[in-house]
Amino acid sequence: LSKYLVDSKNCRIPDIDPLNSDVWPYYQKQDYVHCRTLNLLTYIEKHDGEVFLKVNHSLTGSYSTSNVSCCYANVTRGDGDDDIDNTISSFSECEFFEGSAKISSDLIKVSCQTENYEVYSNVHSIIAHNSVTRSKRRSEGPYSVLLVGIDTMSQLNLMRTLPKTHKFLERNSWINLRGYNKIDDNTFPNLMAILSGMNLSQIHTKCNPEKNVLNDCDIIWKKFREFEYVTAYAEDESKLSTFNFLMKGFNDTPTDFYFRPYLIAAETLTVVMQYLASYCTGPETSGERILNLIRDFSETFVDNRKFGLFWMNTFSHNNINTASGMDDVLENFLSYMMTSGVLNDTIMVFFSDHGFRFGKIRYTYSGWLEERLPFNYIWIPQSFQDKYPESYSNLRHNANKLTTPYDLYMTLQDILFRSDNTYKVQPSLACPKCRSLFQSVNDDRSCDDAAISQHLCTCMGHFYIDPNSRIVKKATYFVLDKLRSTINSFVEGPAKCASYNLKHIISSGITETFYNKKHESFNYLLIVFETFPKAVFEATVSISYQNFYPLFTLQGIISRVDSIIL
Image 1 (cartoon, rainbow, N blue to C red):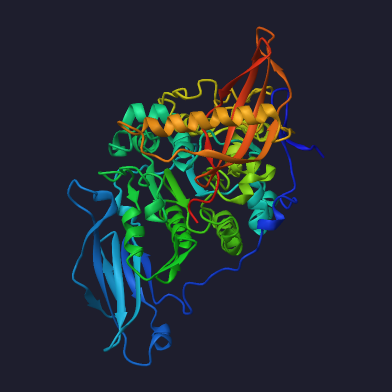
Image 2: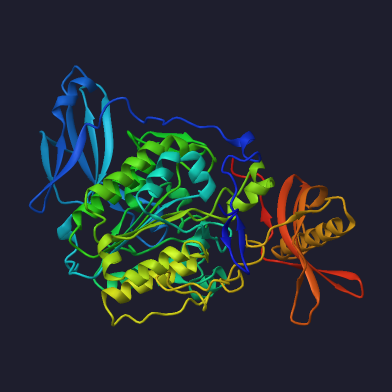
């Protein structure tokens, strides 16, 4: 067996044991945490285009020995110009019903009570087929797309914390992009690379998401909608939401089904926090709410073209082990998706944005590698394999090559073109050389070719170099100077920020020697160091020489890797 995930002339990504010695001090399997002791008292049922809220009367005696009566209120999204995406404007008056109620709203809150107290409350999101009139019924050829993501989940952590899910994917011929490398630090740029083909600076130039709402950003779900796909977007943990954390979010709903109001409404129920995340929202886990939305959306529009992005943070973002409690849930979800037939015409990408970014595991070699290599599995329907055998073969071969989110952007456009050849495929602005994964990726692809900065590139291994060596110390002080000047650039007038000073160098590694076009030698140096005030940073520096004097150049960003969330 190869020791490398990718083994080519310009890229060798190590294949290491998910339970290697670096990881053992931090790994601890966790059990599933239940959000309720009883089954759900209310549920949604659909008949002939109509939607009904129903009470499971066989359970009322379990909730209370007294008479239980239920009412529901319609919930509406915030209105007005200020903070519309972060609020719910109103709950209507709670309307009592007996057993069943016909629902015309797309979001309701239900409350069941005895004479003295509330025994049950929940929220239900309604996905009704007749609420989208322009959707096109699927004809033979167009394929639907589901993007289903788990935040902060490396390939190795998937194998470690979700072994049943991992085995299911491998056993059922999902294609594993073993060389899938992130292109930026956190969720937003890595997701937007898939959705827009742009890097962070290009996104800021185009639509400046910290100051402006994102409705004007060129997000690919607009194109899918234009070509008569039904579109959906859902994400749990409203405070951490990709488009709202330090961002302005959306004024107008960006997709046909926009589930942010549903998750905000769910957070008005009793919330049980787990590692600072809203793990339980009322009687359901937030993650399972997302999985249930995927099921409902896929079933409701099984005969229609559809595009959906569904993202989960609450059981994975803040602790490297918490996902292990969801292993059975995720395996059962994937099993349902495959056996129910909803994936017969759907290409599904099951993936993450990056690995764990903070904490002591990040000071290790395994942590360095994992942070840059999120998991990515792709399901291709049999009908696609039969119709496009060469494209499917290319994808299988590309699984062992260096790939990026920009390639996924090109792949989504490829799917659109196959659904309607009037669609004009546009190159990725950030990565003009990137291409659809249904085309052959160059065997000798480098991180430069794939628009991955050297700091985030996993293609070049590092050899041990003494952290106390003169060259490492010089490089570290160079990085510290860069860090101080960056911080001071944010302050007008005299600098008032505390200045970071070196406490000690935790680890360091150096690449083999490379030569530029002028045949001048250089190396890359990876440094992890601690400062006071307390912080731990990671940086990559290139070292070249002029008259035997070392010249340093910072490669990409300086990453803060100590646990600033937990």
